[in-house]
Image (cartoon, rainbow, N blue to C red):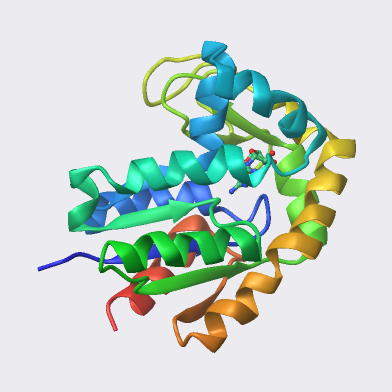
Length: 217
Ligand code: AMP
């Protein structure tokens, strides 16, 4: 049986990465995070990374012709047959249309788009205090969820760092880009009958229970 094909929608700082870790394990889905893929490309200094870096540092969207190809290629891999979780893609209506075309051609469809709803004041607090493990990507927060030992990942011992685009100024721009380019996707997926809104405020465990409740229906 084909698995769940899920999109995680929401502004930067809504907790998509945190929830994606849990969902992918429990539902055995391939996690496709365009942000992670692009950061890896930047770190490795590939041609893709060189093209993407300036846009990412400014909090702008990387151009469609760069991003869509990497997602479509990833969706062609056989491991996605048992279900996938898209995190950070699509981020604009044009990306959503391209995704539909690729899925139609493969005889697949989106099972559910989960839109995580969080007020903007909360997003700014979360993003500017956010830290990540450089090796396993586990997320931390300087106030809400610090690691046991400062600077060291609890899970793998990796180095904890702050994303360069989590500075206050870039965060404001990323939120503006979200409002103008990504938020329209909520109506898009609602009109297609696959949207579920999730209250993204609260403890991550509590939020995950809300997501589980929706995915189990
Ligand atoms: P994220 O980790 O999802 O917050 O993504 C970090 C940055 O990567 C974004 O601010 C964009 O510059 C870029 N990015 C990630 N996903 C996309 C996408 N679907 N389209 C365009 N740019 C993206």
